[in-house]
Length: 139
Image (tube, rainbow, N blue to C red; front, side, top):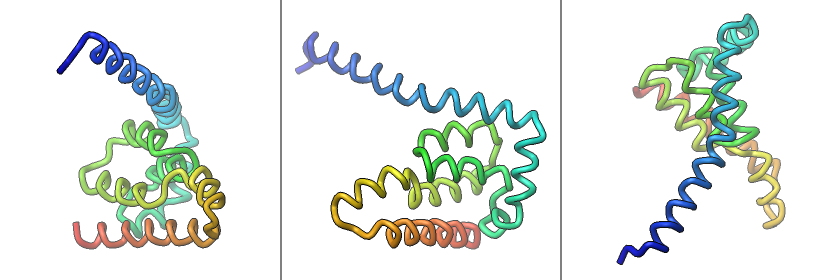
């Protein structure tokens, strides 16, 4: 049964989570939007275009992939939004980020559990690239 305290607790938790996500997504979104109007993003895109082309993504997609791999998936979402990607590209980048996100943080957690971190990270990066190749081929 919904009570006032349940509603209040849920509202408080929802607002807290919205704040935590917004603190990451909004600044990244603003930074990428600014970069889009400077030569920096074009330079990064041109540099990464050959690699990104293999998985069916524009060069600009390298920025959300790097942010997702090193920071978190929310930073990647903030970086993807201003790039105006099509459905196929969004699907490819989502699949790649699903497999290789938050690598430093998850590496620390994995190390504490006894896993070999280098093998884990390499496996996740290869899996992400392989998923990008497969999605690009089949979509």
